[in-house]
Length: 362
Image 1 (cartoon, rainbow, N blue to C red):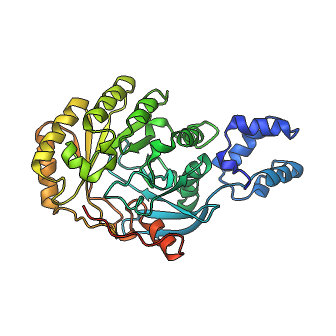
Image 2: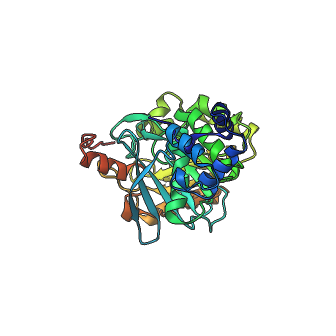
Image 3: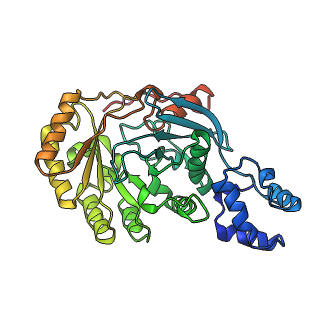
């Protein structure tokens, strides 16, 4: 399989041009066609000589994603399904006018991006890991989701959240390569402060990412304020329990200027007690973190339920009364299977790539 141009950094492309006997300035022209003009064919790069276009076509694919399906909802949230070179699928979700959950302006378009096919971490609320882990996405497959979303929607993506399929920090090298393409001046040139990485709590990788020079935002998929509760939802907690996780987050705060976000999916009868809210409030105050409350988004194959909206608001009130910034996200996208991995799961089951997952219980 030839590499994709959407995965080539300016330096990589310049090195290839030198080896091909072509002038280095062509790298800027090629990258402009890809990321700024968003062409869909190498032959469309009309200011390149025909022989160079021929060399490019022999050595590269233009992109690594084949768009196969779009689901749109009544509130204009859209989910895109992409087929990869090995026949597997990945998905991303474009959310317009989302509340300012991660520091962005509320009138902007946010894209939820995937980093892996499947997931090995088995968070109990998530469809991504129901069929297990297949592989990491490469830089072209990660950054290509952003480019494809802009091509398909005809809109500029203003904010990215790496909260789609997979655990981003388990694919950190490819993720950072993709971020280089997304934030680079010759790429999409999106500011790092408009990027949020979500993790289930890989403590060593949180510390490693804290040393990365860009001011990327971090969100923690917490979902339990104590080990007793979090162990039921997040298997990763058995390896890195709450105390170790919060030590890593304190280190993050010492290295970064961006405010942390604690993600907390509210699951009826599991983690939605007002006592959990009080403990969560103490954690958030200690870290000067925001809390994003998300009522559970029903997933076929999982046996949990979302609490009534009134109870969700009562949980939020405990946090607010403790002086914590807490947003309750009565999320968009229920009618398009917008929870992570649902659309991909249905497609791969339908095609016989995977066996329908057995329903999990708490």
